[in-house]
Length: 303
Image (cartoon, rainbow, N blue to C red):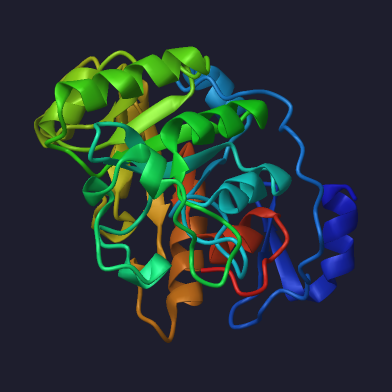
């Protein structure tokens, strides 16, 4: 179904903003979840080429390890398959170091909530941890190697959130080797601290440092190639979006449920989405509960 046909079908329940269908205030979209075929998106993103990124704007990154829904736990392979079906561009992978220094994809610091085990990824070897199942699911914890292979097969770029920020040299070098192994060197951005920035510089876009943003605020010219501006929309000076882009960085705000009030989070997130699209941001990292704001079908039970 084309965007025009979809817009007509939604009728008076939506408005069209910059080519994207948004529900009207206070109304939930009528789209129901349907089984989707998991297939590769047409082309892997190249985050180092701003023109190519903007040609497919808005870039969408699936927060919390994919499209999270019943049967698809955070950072499971099923959750990572779902963004390809819904035509996201990238997926966030939370990455921890195992006891034997391998990178493992998992969201929480402790495994109790997700797996019913009072322990951390660092308590287990790679072989042991990848045998552990998520609660109420057939999915098991996955190595970064396997997950990057899945992402590459689906043409999904990767946002790393390196949780083991003080990890070993071997851990970080294994991440670099896996990026190269799976041919994702042009399709990665990363969150994380000083060690993450040290190792992934040049292999992934880094978050824009505050001191660089301050220079942009003062009207100074600064080389922002290799960086992206990431953060909380409500704290952003909206007039800096264009200058940051003109100096070479991508602008990717986050639309996450925990940033909003529990009772009004959909309305508040939608306000941010509309305001930031109008300002010309390059894309969003989103919780999948908001994906219907961007012409993707709503997923029942999404988090």
